[in-house]
Length: 86
Image 1: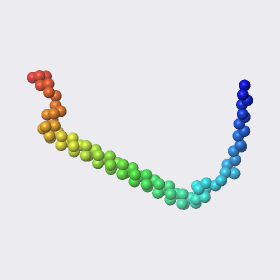
Image 2: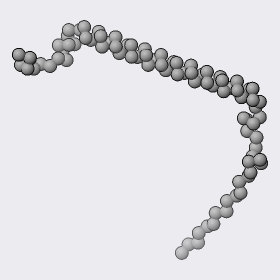
Image 3: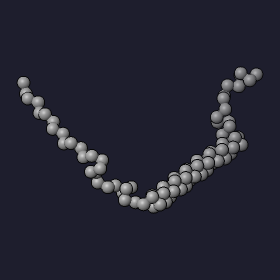
Image 4: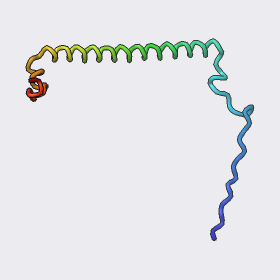
């Protein structure tokens, strides 16, 4: 049988010994401004997505209305079984 290697894990440093993060280094007012800007950008992106979705929906409705008024399209897509309407 082969011998198993024993894993010697290095002890993790305590939270007090961890290096300072950017969040710790920034002042609270700068951090709040960044969060506000982030929220504003997210809201703007959401508005853009909603506008694109609404434009696509309006375009689809306009195309559907145009096709409903097109006799050739209605004739091609109608059922050819006229016996059931007698």
